[in-house]
Length: 339
Image 1 (spheres, rainbow, N blue to C red):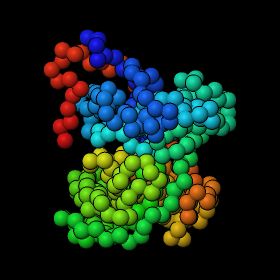
Image 2: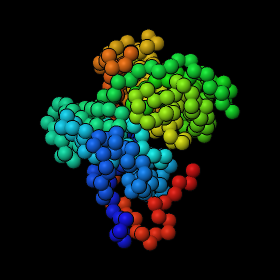
Image 3: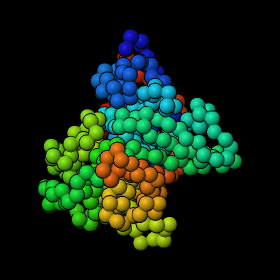
Image 4: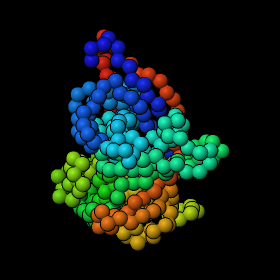
């Protein structure tokens, strides 16, 4: 950083309430021939400093999420994306993929008809994904995230926690590894009033699984632990299919405001294998703030045993844009995280 002021342009979106800060062009270059290689490089140096600048207070907050737009692996994708949160760089982000799809069309980066569907293909560290943008009368109406192949990794894994006893979780891969269990098993309900207990339980489950043989990244992305813990519960409400509510606690205690795009894909893989959700049937998945995604299996794949491509649908909207600056004389530097 040679200049006296560093500027980073960003476009803020939310997908079902979950923030996503898009950086179309970085003031630095990240080395690498693929998005996965760039993620490895970004985890140290200036790219990580920019991540902290955009996540930390006073420019961000403890639950901020975002992504850098980078070159794709090859001409088969429109662009690549590096996803980040307060702890580092993740391998997948469903709600971020949906936000990037809406941004690509709204910004004119990808042309779309006034009515109909347009696919935006994006390379991410865990593979190639698609944001399918549905247009209606010249406006973005809906965005769907098509996951990397998702599959069940392990069932009924026993974990011991300090405050919630011995719990049993199911593990599923959807670009990252998620542990899943009924909220009632931990004596919880998925409500904002239970947020502190939900965070504590999620943190303890992930910590207990650290180093467990079933929690080793099955695809070689470098994530050798559970990324998120999902607490789910049934919802007694009319819907188009199976109706549930969940909350995902990921990284070091971050909480998804949306039902989690990649987390929902993991849930669909588990529900399908258990016979609770047939191919083509819809999961209506609510979040801790009652925002909603719908999801279904759109394709099976031989890439992994029982692998499925899941479509997760919702809405994503812009909420702001501007430049974030770092004055090199600012003693607070890239900021801080209070919790």
